[in-house]
Figure 1 (cartoon, one colour):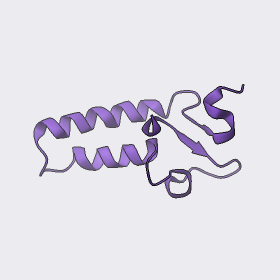
Figure 2 (spheres, one colour):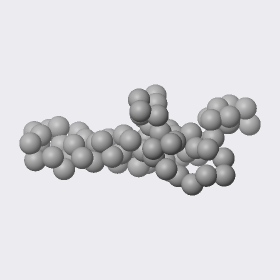
Figure 3 (tube, helix red, strand yellow):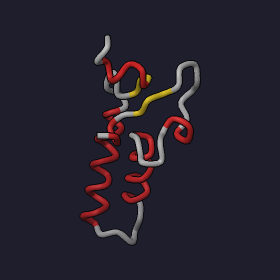
Length: 78
């Protein structure tokens, strides 16, 4: 699932714009769900669900190979 990882460019720093395609990655997911969780126009249920996704995706970026290089194929070639 595309929102659970990000593929980085070798030798470059972490940047959401060049590293995260418009269809999404974990960096965009964190931002989108954080905005939703803070939006007072949303229902309490929607905001709570969004907060759960923020926590989940922040956990994802701490998992080995969830933030890696595209040519590593998520560790499948190591």
